[in-house]
Length: 115
Image (cartoon, rainbow, N blue to C red; front, side, top):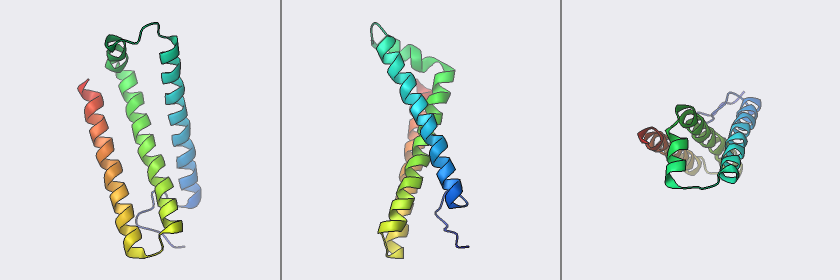
């Protein structure tokens, strides 16, 4: 069995499961936000501030952001291993994606918890 140092999961099945779970979290987040937007009479700054001031929604948003990062990473890893054949270029690409996802996750957490 060949393992990659940049693979998120232990196996293809594990990666597949992570993608499905993160997709469900992202779908739930989008459905909730869509319901919030369509059920609100007025979408003023105070309405959004009230939503994002609640701790449960901050946690839900952070979970959705982490899910987006994991989902994107697995997808980009699969695409890069399929289409970028030179190992050096592929590794540089994968490390850049990992660093980008990590930076976006930290930045998003800082934004969420500063509200």
